[in-house]
Amino acid sequence: MRRAAVIAFRTARLAPPRNLAVRVRSGFQSSSYVLGLRHASGQPKTSSKAGISSTVTPTSKGASSMYIRRFSVAVISGLVGYGAWYTYKGQTELSSGGNPFSAAQQRGFASSPVPGPRGEVERKAVIVGPDSLYTGAISGEGPISKQIDDAGRQVLEMLTPEQSTQVLRRNEESYFVGRGKGVVRYDVVQIPSNNPIEDDHSEKIIEIPQALATATGARSSGSDWMFWGVFDGHSGWTTSAKLRQVLISFVARELNNTYKASLADPSLSSPTTEEIEAAIKTGFTRLDDEIVHDSVEKVLKANSKVAAAELLAPALSGSCALLSFYDSNTKLLRVACTGDSRAVLGRRGESGKWVATPLSVDQTGSNPDEEARMRKQHPGEENVIRNGRVLGGLEPSRAFGDATYKWTREVSERLKQSFFGRTPSQLLRTPPYVTAEPVVTTTKIEPSKGDFVVMATDGLWEMLTNEEVVGLVGQWLEKQSSEQNGNSGSSWAKLFSSQQKGLPVEHHQQGEKKKGKDGQKTPIRQQQWGVKGGENERFVVVDKNVATHLARNALGGRDQDMVCALLTLPAPYSRRYRDDLTVEVIFFGDGEKSGDVVLNKEASASAGDAKAKL
Image (tube, rainbow, N blue to C red):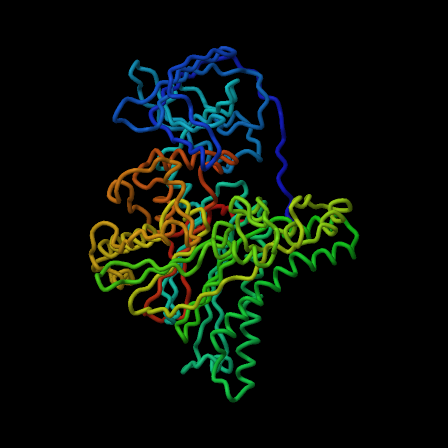
């Protein structure tokens, strides 16, 4: 069991007061209906408190709707803080709990100074207020550290575009799959917002034996089961880490038993689709039973708080799970979804453009089908779904862990009194309210058409639509194909080329089901950030890893100031504006057979770099 890092609170060193002149260049407009935050007043006003003055002026007509603020901040010495965010010549000690970056990385984070209009040195910075976020310019050559003024503002030196790219690419991985079984490559990236990141992922290829391959209808001895999983944790990282470790094994065991049973029956050539989907569901629910219920029995038997701390952690936190299972022999892709992560298929249409087809449905209290299911299972409980959440609290209606929605009140109270636990909701009447049973879809993959699948946690879908994601992958493929023209060593991208301009994707008409009434989340962050402009103004192709390419464009794309500002914010402030991001893209195709899975070094972080892996 890993121990949680403890943040040490200490008093900042006394330093002579100095003035930091902050001129705001641009900002992000917070959304009151998304975050419950208030907009700053558009009327000019001046406040003076403890030597701090600030003037707020509205933007000129025709300019951005975001407010322009001009601050003159006097840094107050002797404030209580929890560690500097930035170092200067190695003289300032860092607290391990308040910063997602390493000390070595921070020493290189000083922005290049540029002369201001009055000859002063200026650097870009982010000003974090209690209800708003702004980018601006800091005058002066001194170091910027984490200091809080009486108005609740914090000044952070903003990452440069080059430093932001380093952050984006720190956890990227890419692999060429030379199995000759219909998969040619997959890319994955993780961008943390929580500290530590609560997302996780897992991949596995299982070569099934000759006898079992017969049950799949295989004509040759070589047949692969390929698994890809992304896990969106909440209320902690332990549940998603547990899924990374064992979920694929649980599902593969059930599939193995199902296929063996078909071998024993001469009347069956292979399991039915229903039997395979049932096996996947059994693997999910058996693991959740172990996490939620078996752990309680073990804790009560051990009667130890040490055992309780280890065994109950995955039960008390929670995680969504999205698992794809590809049978290389049948070319069938099964996608099992528990929660609100999403998988989308990209396939070339008759027009030559890509068509986006969702392979899963977001399972939240805002999904009408999920709400109807919940109300049927808990008749007479008006608040079983309240404000789109289970009992008014949990957004996903299906999840691993989240035991306080599954245990009886008596179990929760007993564990809380004797070991560890949380107080259950006052609305809890007839648990369990949340299930880990997934909804499974089956799709025939066509490798010859260059199909691809994007799997991602909801952090991506809060920022981009299905069509934008598929179109961005198509745009990336066009760029790779044009760059690799004539390079036979990297010819896989040519399988996908069609030389389309813009986002090569077919856009569907926005009918009633496409306005959020089908349960799919809409990209609310676009409204929160005030994103404007067309595809040519918003998106950019600069990354070799397609998952990183999607993450970059989700965070602002061509708008480098937005990308830099969003990546500058440390936890927990970043969580107001973006979620953890885990993105995985699988490319299907008829590639060469080498038998190996090889790291694509061009699109992967250096093996020597420390990974933010749990």
